[in-house]
Image (cartoon, rainbow, N blue to C red; front, side, top):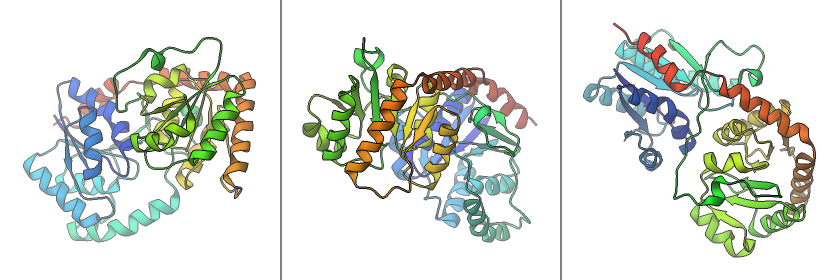
Length: 350
């Protein structure tokens, strides 16, 4: 069986589809990932065969590129993310099943769905389709206890963390003795704090006796390195380091939130946008996190004080860690990607 996967927007979407893609490949199926040019390096870094596709906002060009790809490499099944409605159009044109896999914990905002429908309508007309086709199967990696009331039925799947790796050092997989560990990360596209503000936050956390790690791109690490003294700062493999932490402070990225939940670690979330706010509400509502109110318009200095106070509360209040561990246990009971592959095989059976 040939399975065409799609990803778009950020490298986190590549990491999110990778476990199912690799499970299919390990089961003997052929896989291919179509993603924008900037994401191909991320796919190569985790051994996912990938080809370039135009950016999602270029609807006609992306659909034509996918149709052209299907002529050279005819798939038996296509899999796209929650927001990849164009993949449904492709599947209808090819007369093959379409599977929708949630990339992370975040629900699609209703207004976003409406905009997608409006943008795809010309493509439906062009291909002679009366309506946007629905998926043959929806896969959700969100823990069932965190799914919003009234969410459509979906096949649950266990979240398996996947990210770029580097040569491991013992500190990355060994929990420090006698002191808590706090990880700060803002993903690859944003920065939570400037250098001076980051130093103040690190000093505040160090004052609690915590060891502080700062996950950052090479460029950001170079900019922050001297300001943070002997704090470890740089590219950190989150899947390995998260289980050694007692708290993670982050920007509300879906893959980050899910990886930390999988590790059973509480979170303090500073949402960077509306999508991140939805993720923050879900995780904070579960009792496994605190959210710094996104509507705050304070200075960086005031924000540091609020974040530091939230970190102290989480580190000193056992219920956050207890709730995070309970969610990790729930995630561990869900069907693995390898089990889901068997369902995919029945969808594509002649």
